[in-house]
Image (tube, rainbow, N blue to C red; front, side, top):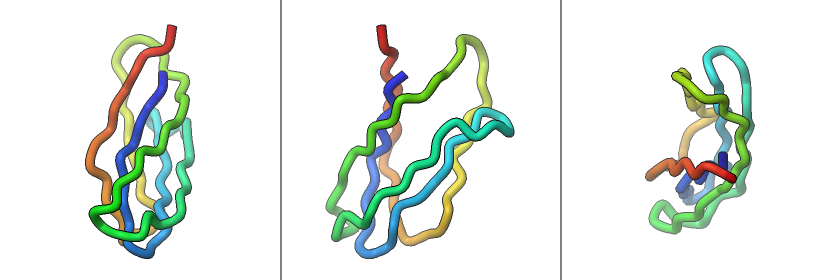
Length: 75
């Protein structure tokens, strides 16, 4: 699945991990976007099996914003 994370940050690095339960499935690192209202979308490809999942996002530091997450299935 392609997953888009819409984020912004004035000066702090954007860093977070995505877990399925206790299993790390992605790490995201992005430089600051230059403003709290200066949004960018970070796209990652994640392997997501069918069925129920317990996805978690764990921030590695603060000072950044996340507006939305979009999941798109790849065929």
